[in-house]
Image (cartoon, rainbow, N blue to C red; front, top):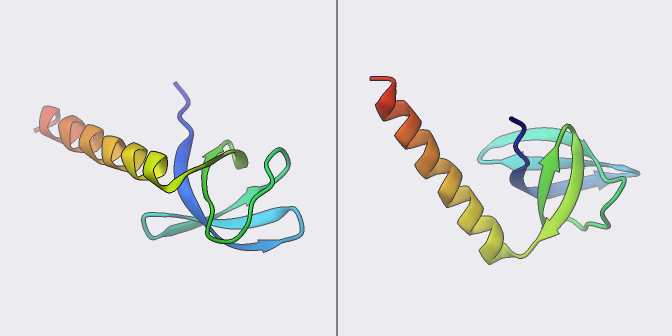
Length: 76
């Protein structure tokens, strides 16, 4: 299963953006979404696929953290 992750755009250089995911920064292509520094985005396979509003991004981030906690508990 593939999952698109929410992050925040920290910088843009041409068609590449640095996107931060809870302290981890990766390069992502801006090919199909018009984004600006400070935008919340979904990234899949190294490409920004959608811009999100802050509330939607915060909800998704909270959900992913909850899922990680549940997965961690089931591995104990």
